[in-house]
Amino acid sequence: MKDVLEEHLALDEDTTDIFLYVHGWRTTPEKAEDAAMRLFRMVEDLQRGRPDHYPRIAEFRPRYLCVRWPAKSPPTTAGYRAVRERAAAMSHDGQAAHVLACLLGYFNDHREFPAPGPDVMRSAGGQYLHCVGHSFGGRFLSHAIMEASSRPAEGPDTLSWPWSSETYPWTVDSLTVFQMAAPSDAFAHPPFSGLLSDNVLNAPIALTFSPRDRALGLWHRQTENGKNGIGHHGATDPSEHLHTMPLHVPSVPYAFPDPPARILNVDATEIYRESGLRVEGAHSDFFHPESAHLLLTLADHAR
Image (cartoon, rainbow, N blue to C red; front, side, top):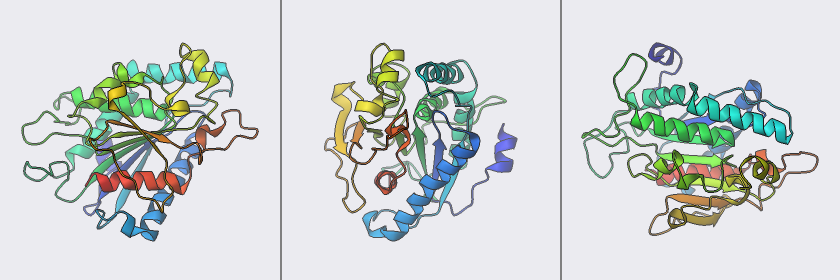
């Protein structure tokens, strides 16, 4: 595994930000790559067009990675159930979370950290790691982060993730999930509840939602014991860690809550609207400058 990553994913020395994208339901490998390129092109265009909106990002030389997995199924409740079970099997019993954990560990292994102190999350070269998921991709990322944070650094097929090291705590610098396909109370129970630990994430978990997302409304309720998906009405538990805010247009800066919240429910109702003949509604309607603004704001906030 490490040799493969070394061959294909060598980081440029001047990289400032690493974005890891995992796609969601009913996405072919080709469409997954197109989606990642489309989203991150918006990120770069917005940062170039409005650099003053992200003042902590003095320089921005990102590296992007798209992880692809078999997510195709019919656009029916049965198809939703099938891909949900596949995602669970790959995350719990298969290799998806392990592979992503190794990948995240590789990135960590190649980030040079300064001496311990208030800025321990920033590498010497200014590299930050941002995880971005859509739909079931958010499940994969959540499982991978938790698996990686508890996996020992030694072993023939593992890579270092020494978040409990005395030298520095290892965390992800931002985690954003567009329209997460998980029950609304998922973060109140393992494994997702583990992401609320101070040792795992160096940022709030940003979760967009829109009631126009039909895939995570009726279909999700039929397959998840009557519970809406997070991407339909947001996370509901644990309530003490939640804060809800609207998805902002690029001209409006974000103000994060004080004291900080661990989970940000980002209401995208006015932006994620696409429906028409699409049976899943607004489930994949997140390719907007507002989404790029959220990602850049979190990248700026991580510094």
